[in-house]
Image 1: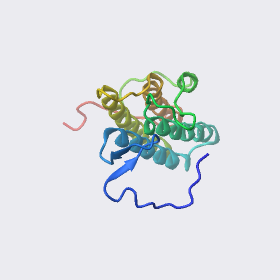
Image 2: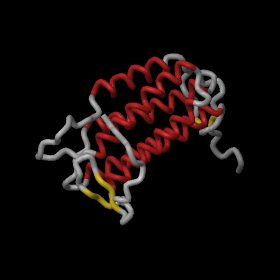
Image 3: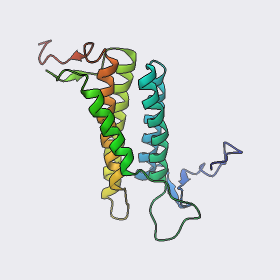
Length: 190
């Protein structure tokens, strides 16, 4: 369990930070940027919850917890050396739950006739913002996974990919089951 007695430690004052393994990395490191972006995403999901209905709020509360799991997964690179604790990692069942929720929400929606603009209700607009940050986190995680010595689990990559889809469909649900979606009109202002 996490125990924080002191919020500032001064250990990062020189521009580096500690990973879950104890290894120090520059704060500009792609791994740190990856889990930092997941943390940013989590904060945006918290904003969405301010205007979410009870069903969406329950899903988002679980997702926020899972985003901490993902951050812990990314902050603790797999090593050959044993850790003094069990390494927390995203697991396939978390991806599968997102897929079931996407399918259930999508069943309520009419098929799209155009791309959806990130607009509509406050919850939908914030969900679209969250979706774009999830996509940025995914790009960083893919870059991290392609680095020669870095490992990112398949489940973590699948989770972040599915989460952006989940947030998109949830935004449509938050827009009166898609009836309040603001659709892109190509060339409208020409």
